[in-house]
Amino acid sequence: MLTLICMNSYRTELTLQPYPFRLDYEDEVLCLGSCFAEHLAERLLAAKFIVAPTAVGSVYNPLVIAETLQRLLTGKHFTEEDMFEHNGLWQSFAHHGCFARCDQHEAVQAMNDALDAAVMALKKCSLVILTFGTAWVYFHNEQPVANCHKVPEKQFVRKCISEQDLRAAMDAALTAIHACNPQCQVLMSVSPVRHLRDGLVQNQRSKARLIEMTQALCEIHPFCSYFPAYEIMMDDLRDYRFYADDACHPSSLAVDHIWQQFMMATMDNATQQQLHIFQKFRKSVEHRPLNPDTAAHHTFRKKLQEELVNNQTAFPKSDWSFEAKQLFDEGDQPAC
Image 1 (spheres, rainbow, N blue to C red):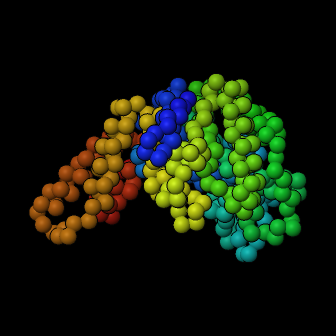
Image 2 (cartoon, helix red, strand yellow; image 1 turned 120 degrees about the horizontal axis):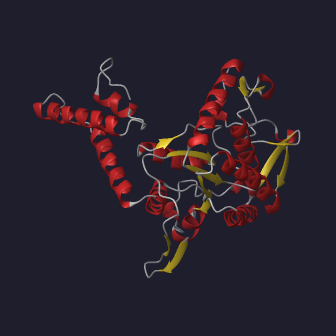
Image 3 (cartoon, one colour; image 1 turned 90 degrees about the horizontal axis):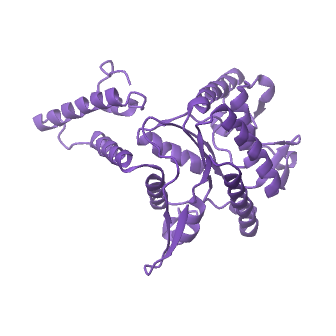
């Protein structure tokens, strides 16, 4: 799927070949995994693709990702027995902290609302994007957890899971997904974020297991493909100007580059052109004039309002709420 080209510009550039599927504006996408999966979901949403809401928030290890996918296939709701209270918040070891609430009932409701939306999306989506962050897994009462929620570390057992065990868990989940939705494609990647708390050596060993796992799964399942986000970051963008201040996470420049690679590999020219039209429209909506009361600005704003209505008609499944809020006064907003 990719070719390595040695350049004279101090880069080893990865050139991706198009994937067997092409993503367009009729497709629905479900993203699950590390924060890199959320970055892709945010980019796709901003580009007006149909993206399912997050099911459980950021999760990093394949065991929890596999368990989450299996739960989405069964639709089994969370209950108060799945909750625990810590520092005044009700939480779940199956969820990211963004689902924490002060009220237990509200926490369960938020988790099940997100679950129901993801269950519906998985049944009809065209693409599932999975991003794996680490092979290190924390266990609480012998169950793998998505997040420790700052609970004392002595309550957990930490293990680096073998590639074979990771592959077995994901293989079962992917097989079940394909049986439920045979038209769905799966795009897997390894997060380019270093887990420095594991240590540099342990982090590399962890990433190696994830890379080996995804390669094996792609060989087993023809509907699975690999997106080399990790390799782009490590080999193409191996300069600290492409890292955030923590020297660990990709900078906005690096995320932009990886997003461009993703677009070119997964979208045809017509979809990319439409995406750029939407980006230009969004930029115009966000523009703040120095003199908003001029006739010229009112004409410009009226033109944007008409363009929004046309976009809503042509792409009714896309989320236009941000643009409607910016362009119309309260009470005058058209349905999005």
